Image 1 (cartoon, rainbow, N blue to C red):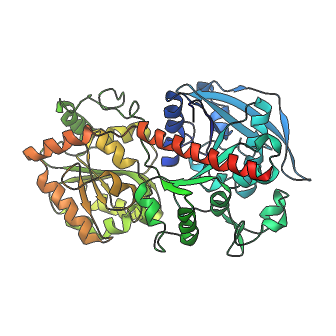
Image 2 (tube, rainbow, N blue to C red):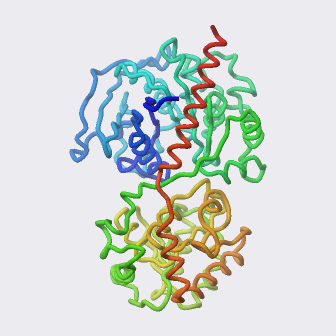
Image 3 (cartoon, rainbow, N blue to C red):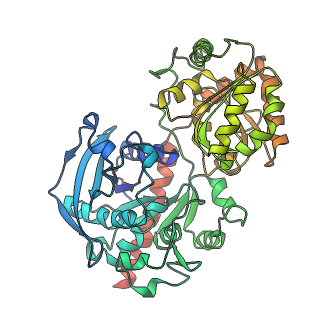
Length: 486
């Protein structure tokens, strides 16, 4: 298939406009890579007030207001605005002030079911208003799960040849609601069966996206295999197996924007550095220690985390093993928000180890970059990790990851090559991996590991090619289905 696909990426969070987790980074950087490869890639997202009312984003209205008929009784006057990021057009949708009152990234996921059902219909209406019908609509996570069924069942002739792909960024978040969800969209009741929309007596957005999309992927090859098992399959492992058997599920590893995550040009760090000249990294460590009021010590390892506070991220293991690693010379820095119990544990550790532990409970992107640059190791003891971007950023900055071998961590971090890996989900295994890393710190082998880590390929080029292959496969499926209808 020739180059030049028209691709619309749909996401409820897109960096830098709205960011809660890794989805925002992927939704921002993948379209840029697709555009660099010669495709017409665009992004559409909710029109959050923190974006549309921010002069820095130079948002402008791109079409006249139009009406979206969500159902017979709910007609929504809709505004479509436009900005751009790294040369990629970004469209912003809002109606009935469903998204306009969102003024912080922390509130992105508050609108609820009906707002996302409206979004599904509004995306198609916006494309028609723009007179731009994409070849492929790329849906992301549960919030966009009803877009493929709306396109197939309600889209009409204009959309017959448009393929849909659906990316599962985290199977644990699925969007479960009642049967009345069909009524909100005026969908035919015949779709409410176990093979299509019904899920355990209700409706599941993620299942809906998987069933009706032409192709489905998750964000690493290992996670695509793990979710076939009951342990990781989050009640949908049977569906994941069916999709795999049908050739409709694959794993594509995420990349990162290596222009943004670049220790040679990072404007937020004290001193740039490269694999050939690591002197700046030592200076960044000292600067971070001073910023966080930690003793400036170059001879002990500084381990960090930039993450969410949750058991998924391994904080239950950290709570059990903290005294084991903190009793040895080291420093531990955590930048995170999330579960209150984990925050309480970290505050207690900081109180007991004031010269070794710092917990910063906020979202702070510039500080995150200084932590990546100034740390020696980066801890990710995840219970499961669909891909993980933290370890890729850490590798780019020569900060060696300490990870559990699961999901995307298993695909990117390798013991003795660019980091330290433990197998089983227990505190002992994590503690032993931390101790291996800390024993290696300062040895000649350490410098080689750091240099090898920094020289890895973590960009989007290979993954973007894999996505294009999936888009092409989806189009073959869609065009074949259209021919059968005729």
